[in-house]
Amino acid sequence: MTKHSYALGLIIALAYVTVAVAQHPMLDAVASEVVQKYQTSSCGQLILKKDENLPASPGEEKASDMLRTNPQMRHEFVGMVADQVVDKLVQCGMIP
Image (cartoon, one colour):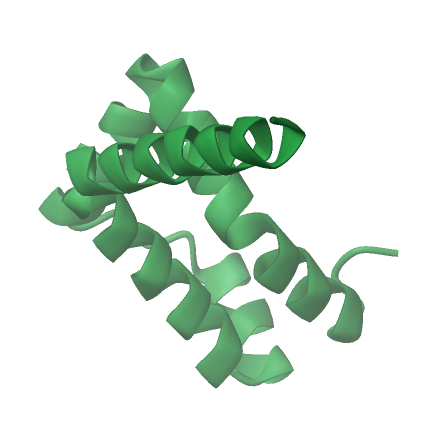
């Protein structure tokens, strides 16, 4: 009986995760782009970009607005990118 309960719980959890991911393809694309930017940029490039203060592109502005206004999507986004971005910033000495 316990094995069936665990199996049912696993199936429900997988269904929830699958639906949550499928609902936000734009979020997945933005998160992938952010992670790739940090993985492929050198520390020098990241520091220069930080100092440039360039205006955001229309796509970046739309993604920023979406994350600012939707706490659930913001939480999902942070969960997708936080480890990789923070790791890179620490490696580059941008976070003490």
